[in-house]
Length: 195
Image 1 (spheres, rainbow, N blue to C red):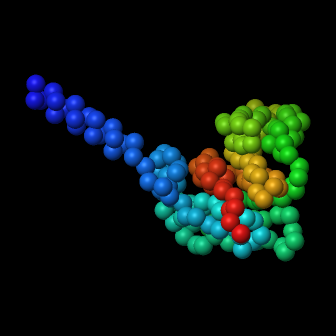
Image 2 (image 1 turned 90 degrees about the horizontal axis):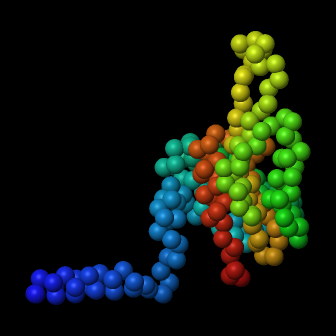
Image 3 (image 1 turned 180 degrees about the horizontal axis):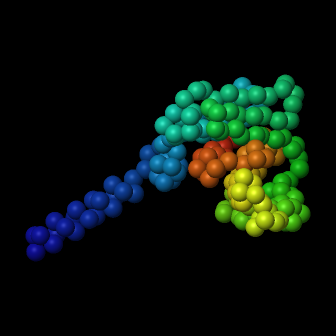
């Protein structure tokens, strides 16, 4: 009987400890915190965006041993974030326009005779997609001509200070591992509501 009572109290104590929270404690889900262990917080306020973003650090194995560099013309509508030679993200300011992800999907659909587009992640304000170049005359092409070209892309829309910003990969795309890191960065964007 004592053994059962001990196990019951042990189980109850475990439940109580697991459900305790502290005010001000990190509210990100555990999986998100674990997914971002190769990232560092980067404040975009100094570049005119009231937001922070998590960017890959040197442990991400993409040659990101340098500090993130941001290129932005004052009063411009485009930012470029470079983290080493293999990570180049573009941010476009679309003001009060909305529905930029749907618009991008329509543009991709119009290119169906050139590219086959496969959506790997498809959400209302975020997509990861693969483009496969359609090659005519593949069988008769010389051996030096690439038979297949696959690129990966990410495109996400965020509202910051009441305006629409698109965070995206470059037009040429990247290998899948770089796009996965960019996707985590885009998902991590948080508006800074402090003044």
